[in-house]
Length: 225
Image 1 (cartoon, rainbow, N blue to C red):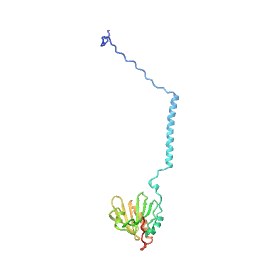
Image 2 (tube, one colour):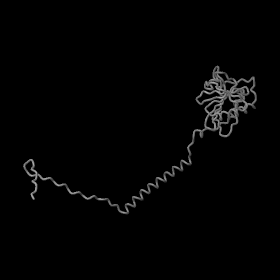
Image 3 (cartoon, one colour):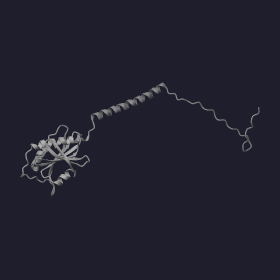
């Protein structure tokens, strides 16, 4: 049998197609048993170190729990501040005794600064449900002051609490106010809270002021800066 002629090159010579080199056999790495043991020991050591670090972090976090905003509130002795404000106010500032879970975050006397301004007693109350109701009291209330303290909310009804009729003002946004005249003073409770908390504060305030001395008709509140 005759072999096929080899192809001719451009220069007239015979060109031969080179054969591809033979494939090299694949080589698998071989790790000795000792090396494999050392590698496994290193991985296990890293995992144990990570677990130890996580355990330490959890212990530190457990010993130092996060504090919420109310954890930093210093207790205020409302009765003590009210006693200091009484001679200036000319009436008994409300310092109602409230159930457990209630806290005051401030208590102060706001003087009448400027013509037409109204001096009033002001207490901030934090409810057991982490809401806020301010108590404001004066014996010099006028329509302008009332509107300003209640956010110009319209009168929407009344509530009977502990024998006292409270006027309800509600602007529909969640803010509401209760207004009552008790022992010759005007008391406003205002804030964003449920009626259960408003009623608790209103009842305690009514009981406290019902037994308070009647303001002297000759007492004149001093203006303070």
